[in-house]
Image 1 (cartoon, rainbow, N blue to C red):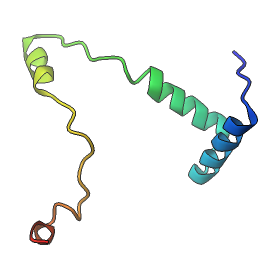
Image 2 (image 1 turned 60 degrees about the vertical axis):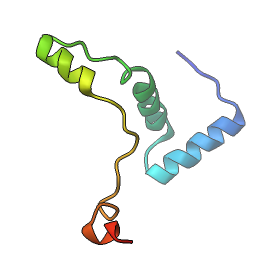
Image 3 (image 1 turned 135 degrees about the horizontal axis):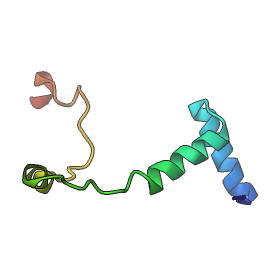
Image 4 (image 1 turned 90 degrees about the horizontal axis):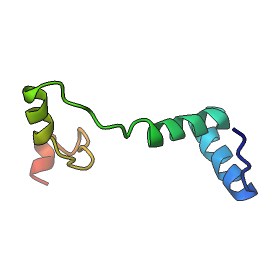
Length: 75
């Protein structure tokens, strides 16, 4: 498959790849893998796994270590 990029998208990809220290092709492939392959839902094998997956929920991002220190609670 060949994908033709516009100059604006190619520039943005090159900039992002340079910041990460990887070739643009690797960045594009990693991004496509994350977007299309990581979204496959887990299929529970038994009732225990089904129950465990039903309990899970997305809580957003995790807090940093400094945000959950004892000293930070009193700020």
